[in-house]
Image (tube, rainbow, N blue to C red; front, top):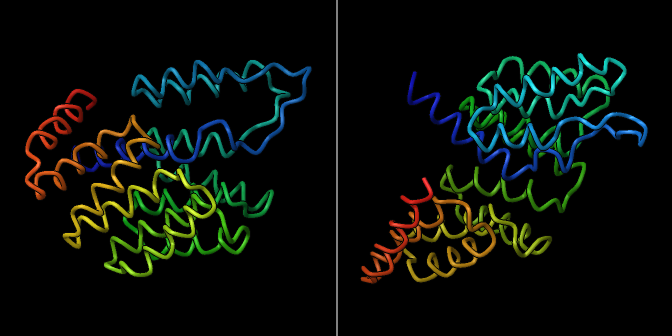
Length: 234
C-alpha cells in the first residue's frame, strides 16, 4: 500500500508540473468576483500537502457560494490527494456538463495511468487528439505510453510531432531520451537529456537518468555529478 501511495504521489507531482494546475482551468472568473486562493493552493502543493490545497479551494467555494465551480481544478486536486474515485466522478460530471476538452481528457488519461489502465489511458489521449491533432502535451503523453509498450518507432513519431509544436516540450524530450537509453543509444540519450534538463531543470529524474547514460559512456565524473544533483533535489 505504501509503495502504491508513493507511486501515486510522485505521479501527481508530474501531473501538476505537466498540465499546469491553474493555467488551463475551464471557468472564467469575472473581474468583480473574489479570486480563488491560487497562491495558497500552490503553496500547499509545493509543500507536498494536496489535501490542504483541496481544502483551501473548497473553503473558498463555501465562503463564496456564488462563485463558479472549476471542476477541472477540483479533479486535479483530487488526483494529487490520492482520491481517484472522486477525481473520476468530477471528470465524468465535467464531461457530461461541458463535453470533452483536451484538458479534461489529459487529466483523465493521467488518472488512467495512475490506475494502471494503459488501454483506457490511450483511449483518452486519442480522444484528445481528435479535438486538437497537434497538441504537444497530448502527443508527448501518448509517446510515453508507446515507449512503455515497447513501440519505440511510434513513440518517436509522437515525440517528434510534439516537438514540432513545442520544441521545449519537457515530456517529449525526456521520452526521447528514455527511449534512446532503453535502446542503448547512450550518446543520443545524453543529448536529449541535456535538452530535457534545460527545459525542465526542476525534475530530478532527468539528472538521475542522464547519469545512467553518462556512466555507460564512461563519463563517471558527469554521472556522479548528476546523481548528486538528483539526490539533493529529491
